Amino acid sequence: MTDAKKLNITFSRGDTVIEAGRRAPLHILSCEGLESSNIDLQLSANAQGDGGTVTVDRYDSKPITMVMEVDRKEDSEAWAEKLRRFFVPHVDTTITVDNCGRQTMNTFRLSKFRQQRTNLYEPFRFLLDIICPDPYMKSVSEYVSNMADHLALFTAPFALYPNGGALSVRRFNEELLIVNRGDVTTGIIFEFSASGPVKNPRIDNLTTGEFLRVMVDMAAGDVLVINTQRGKHAITLNGVSVTQKKDRDQNCRFFQLAVGENVLKYSADNGYANLSVVPRHRYEYYGG
Image (cartoon, rainbow, N blue to C red; front, side, top):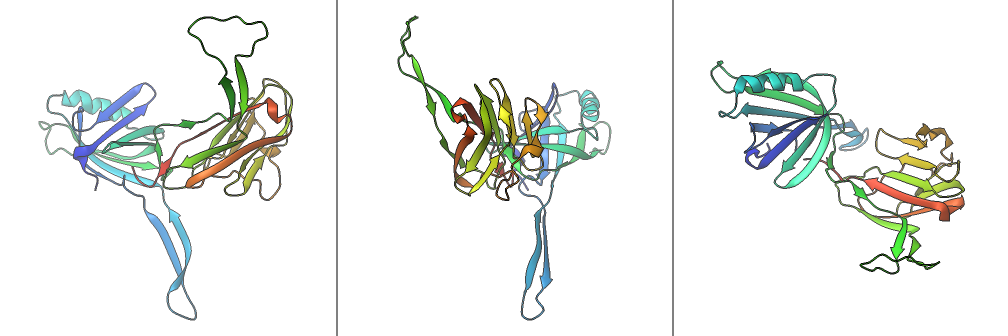
């Protein structure tokens, strides 16, 4: 069970934010499920010998159970109505967890919302059961890099109007080191922006040997987005799905960032110098 004294939780959907914690209007009395999800582990017995063989090893969706109470200084009935209107079924809601200083987040659906006070004169106390379909908690910060940007050659505290003078040069980082500091492999979003003609852009994970190549022709102003996150595999060109344009090579896949160091490299059949490539990702953890 998570220590509620060192735990702060924020629920948010749209413009509505509800905070729970030691100094918040809602106090967390107990919380279970943040630390880990259930593991579906199945084995088959070995026909000739001791032990068995693992047939299923799956990390299930994350159920979280909390008991919370409205602070005695607050209007308990007003809060009860606010909570009833917020915790409703069929709607995705974001949970952000600050557990002893480490912040993580996820998206959940409501499983149960029940009042738990024994009489109406007590502060409003309730049981909250939620389920995160994705069992992995995400880092709150999104990590963004630019594999091709501009490097300043000269800076000054005043305006300068040169005639043909170069104040910056474009730097091509064909290779980029990304360190995944999470507990598990994680998906990544690549945004390819073209400043001129580009044919069949490609991104390689040199650490794992995997790559993803898209068989498209890009023109100046085009933006190609590749999403390799679990359950969200997609490729769009200017907002239109072109997932079917993925190279059919057996090693071409929506690869994940391995835990630890990953060396990424971008290229194209033609016009790679016209590309700006920006990868974005979050760390993922077993628990919050």
